[in-house]
Length: 300
Image (tube, rainbow, N blue to C red; front, side, top):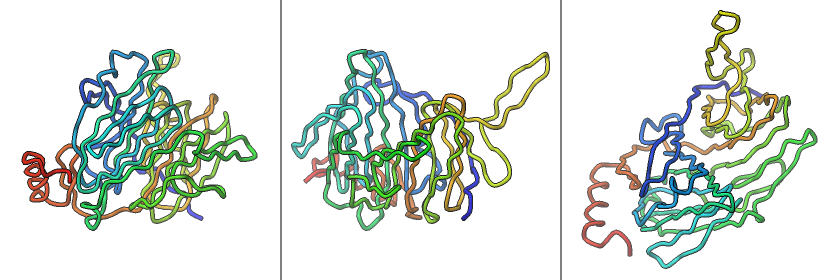
């Protein structure tokens, strides 16, 4: 067994998308080598309805899959194929955009005005870029959860883990998507397929992710008794941890425990051409997509 060392650690970037939704970008619109097959991830956590109520009006997608995981509030959605519905707390939507779809997503807060969720974009391989669009809507009660002897729990959205399998299937990147909670001051070893790219995103509490010899974490600077102290151990809220190769990770939770997403997938190792929510392999394909959009041929 080999522990995956930490390859990089970063925070999020506050930004706005859609019609003025305030969110935090975990990664996206940059070098995809570390995250391949994943392209982008957003944390849309907010307690102020004025910062998210305008939502994400009608917009196109082609060549990717979008994964929406809602923790608080709800997201109403509709698309150009006539599908419509609402994602409640704990639910998941995995949308394969394929050759093209227009859709909208309109977030709503809970009784306290809270809205919290994540959206992840997964790339499609060249052979499936123009496949037919597909939805998988999963209610929160249908997402399996397993608890280990030490109190660690995992919600299994995609893939298999500790003897249970998630409800989403048939995904090109063969991903694993877990929502893991570890009690305070607990050391946990978690298996990860050697051939997958993997990252963790902390959104509650804190933890350190250590390789075999040295703790690695966010560099924090503060002054204690007039002296600058460098802490290189614990990573906290809104921290992205990208892992190098290996077949397991080690997590040491902090005093308040930790909750994080652990996501992995098989790299496609294909060229990436971007134009917002349209992701193809070449610029010529991007130009064709834009032409299709302008001439009304984007969706069939």
